[in-house]
Length: 439
Image (cartoon, rainbow, N blue to C red):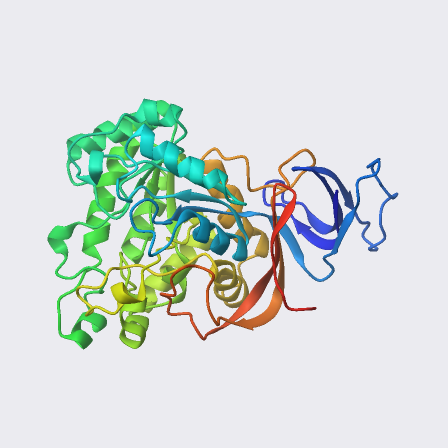
């Protein structure tokens, strides 16, 4: 049995917050003992635990929230385990306060069949977190032939995405959207039209001019998003626009969500897109290259406003590990993507709460309850009888990013100072990560 005492509990599902003691037995929250306004405990509650020892965590000065949920991560297994694997990715997730992740399907082989799907889910069960996965929309992510949506959903998939590749063939896209509407399952889209792009991962503007090459303009994203939002409203699909990067897309989504049926439309923001601009690519090179690219300050501000007003209702990391050898290639040939899991909460605290004035409860909602709700996961809330999946963090602690537990180290945040540090991560009632530094 585990007792977390004196922490400041925040539950984004109910909106309740305050100092509380939380009793955990096995994998469930047994009892929450809220304190009075004066800070005194309500009548003490000590459940009958027989001879079971009681582990006590004093969380005074820390926030206790639901374990974070990331619905956009790449753990690279099968096929690219030199970059990351499900075991190492899960360690990175735990260190970042995440207890549930949803994997993308762009592995080798692609997760487009029941055999590969079972392999990934079985590997996930060997970890200390909850690992779910999407399957691809098209077989082999070739954009030609649809997968067996119903069969893969029954086999354990939680959504469908060709992340990394846009769906350009409208007939296939309509088929996928109709399946999404029929099955009430999210369809997550990577929105970049290659017809506009000379070099992906590089914003067409100051960054491309600096390197003397072509890049990716905003229209590459906004043009295809405009098409897909219209089709989603027509079909009733549950649509998630992934890793939104530009101001035009934020506004298109805002308008679409105000239309009838717009409640089924969702948008992701990544920590790197609400924190960095194209200047980071100029400074850090390939370790700040991602698809879609980092853009301009006005885009970053539009993303922040979209998160604050709920237009962008999900924060997802797009955790994308690459080896040093991969990232050592010249800019136009190096793969896109950076690490995200171990710095996401701190970036949210620093950029959204501290600088942009967003309530902490809203940050936790975007990072736990909203993504869990979209993917129909039993996560993202804290209540009696619910799962004992929690993150404990000090929102005021400064720390320096000195390395990652991920297999890879590709991040522009190495060496940077962060505000807000995960102290302990609890999944299924067990402490799966704890900060080694003393109070």
